[in-house]
Length: 586
Image (cartoon, rainbow, N blue to C red; front, side, top):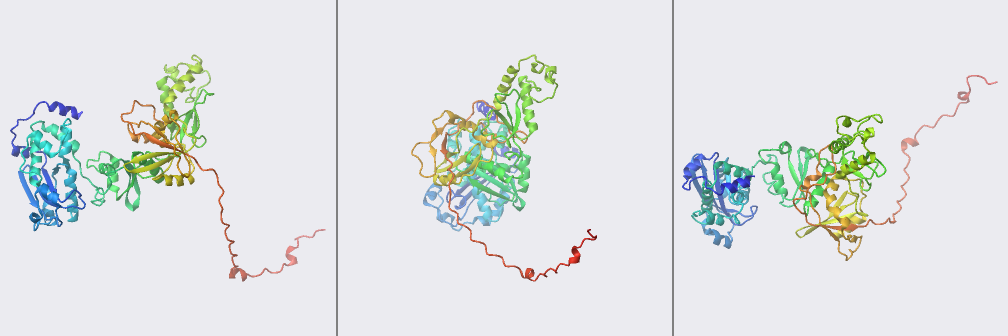
């Protein structure tokens, strides 16, 4: 791993201490700008820049540039005390938009380096936007770089770097002086590590800027950094993609990395026109909502999590020796016993069973995967991969036992509750209740009053959802050995405490997503790497049927006959001769 390389390199200096700054600048593979700003506050959307400092290094050597700016608003007293920049100092200085074009040209095409770069880059992007200029750059944060290169250090602020590396500040909390400290830090790194290793570290922490040109400049910056589901829309408001994250802004930005390592992200980047976000309280709510929206809306670029037209499973009852392939159209997967795996096609189910047969030396003829005459050997027996149950050389009971053991890795658990449940999820001061019934997600509400209303009008569970099963199956399995949860019925909540179910998340919550041919239950894995917060489960009771008074609809007024009908010609009187037979009856 890269961290190990860093620890080894940290032991022995690579380059001499007295490095030539000008020579280092000219040797850089690409020009860099070390930038620092002083502002009137910390909000990039509302506060303004009071000073800009830039140290530009590259093939041309080293160049420094700085200026004070008139923020057109008062500087708070504590900011004046911190930076030494007063209202009198900035009065009469140029406004940002008067020098925006020149500054954009100075920064264009260079690696943007700043300490806590999100702050400085965000302020500059907003100021450029107000000036009518779309500014984008590849961004290197020296805080992140320091954390990567010196993982054992406790602090990585600018004061910590000064103390640790003996940097020489020309001042503090002034733009050019702080920018120069970053350039000194960069020089110091080259006395500790090789250029190749520094290049690898820079590549890992650099944020590549490649926002799609069709999106407004502020579209991604305005996204929340909290859990939720995001939706990408294309031309004509066509839904392109639905995704989820615990940090929506960071996840959306990752789709548009300039190297586009994922072909799907490149296609989305070319087609996207709009981003929509639906917030959730936490990660579980985002996972559930994503699964629901993908199935309902069928986005163009979502292949996983879509509802399969057909769903199959292998069933091996206690009375049978051969597994039978059953369909969710005829068998209730949430309640049926002895089901193994879920598959979106017959071919996928047969491939899975054949793989188990090869692994456990099972007879494909006995499993129904090969058609051979009774008493004739299967193909596996002929190549010594079958113990011979097909020709009577091995007992059938032993083969059936080994078949059950092989299928156990795919066994489906029945719904462990007598009715629907609500899972309570907290995020800060917010709470959300996710209603699940028979491995199907029925919706979420934000309060217990709303939960009561949902219980009163709860829709029926219409089918087993394998994605919800994979997401919650293991987390709810422990409830069978836990104190029963408190029932929740319409009206005031009971005083009894709900059961708290400790649970372990899969290593990757995206385990819900599977390939298009098989959505089989995931076999048991080694112990998970991270433990999720306990689930709080409330048992819900569907209301009994009730009669309600329905107003009888008013009798519809009789429709008057049309004038055309009234004026219709009356039929002519019948002519007796028309009814006479063409021959005489004698």
